[in-house]
Image (tube, rainbow, N blue to C red):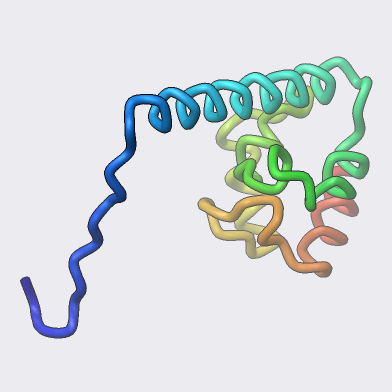
Length: 109
């Protein structure tokens, strides 16, 4: 190990804790899929989702994943939009700055 780098050890989980963590992860994936479906169908707008960034499900979603949920937006287009605005490809919704949100909403109409 190099100097100054601490080793990260994961906590030991009991089988029950592991099961609870897996169930929570599945619930989050399910809720994200539900939000994506509503975006695709037009039941939700990008503005509504971004306004809910404090929610764990929305806040932890990657911006690229969110953009790809919009009609007519795929991986290439979402990447181009994010580059134009200056949003890193790994950025999550909760991590967006006010100017980035405004620019994203302007860009997406």
